[in-house]
Image 1 (tube, rainbow, N blue to C red):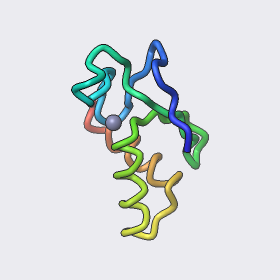
Image 2: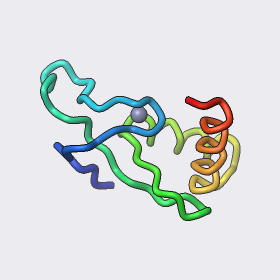
Image 3: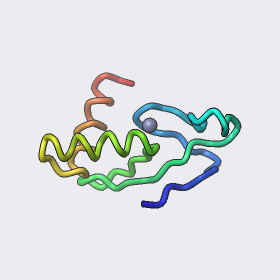
Length: 80
Ligand SMILES: [Zn+2]
């Protein structure tokens, strides 16, 4: 799993963070990776949100890519 460091417009679509949360890297951009959802959406996530989604997928036995769509649609409904 390769995350992109210092991507200029890096922004996690789940937690909305743009800065690296690690205190030693205050001025760095958050490392993110773009995942493709089941419906073909491009979902940009930071490492902690990616880990959370992976664990959730395993627990609920739902496909990781399908989970991305479900979460995306929930966020859209809630308008956040
Ligand atoms: Zn995140």
